[in-house]
Image (cartoon, rainbow, N blue to C red; front, top):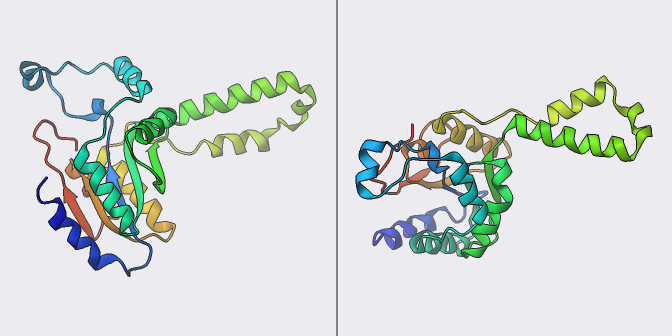
Length: 211
């Protein structure tokens, strides 16, 4: 972490260039290449999705001091910061609360994996409640509106390799007119693919690899 101040000097070169954006990437722990063989001897447990989701809901993960310091330095330099994570959309509230409680503020956007099945189920559940309360709304439930609801859920990001998912999200930002000047993450899949940043910073991670 002692190299961070030196790395931050690179950002000064970017200050006058268009939209200034920096992406900090995280991911769901169950997407990591954890195996019983290489993790149990050092105290790790085999991943359990339900336990992980419960842990996310606690919103109690502490910030890494060096990462939070980098985040604040980037904000002071005027960058727009996008937080790109492999967590699912249904974990947005817990993830946002955790970020706030651990000291993060004023990010530009928090990007999570979309789950089309969950989105559609939520929309239909809401629609059922509305139809129960307002029976005349049944007249609006024609093919056009059904197609609109289905399209609004968007495509699912579930099951996509990390490189594909991260590349697609970066490309979406570029299509919005942003120029990605910096990107950091602890996986090469955070940094590679297409729509890559002008400068990428690989953080050390000796425990796992996500393609």
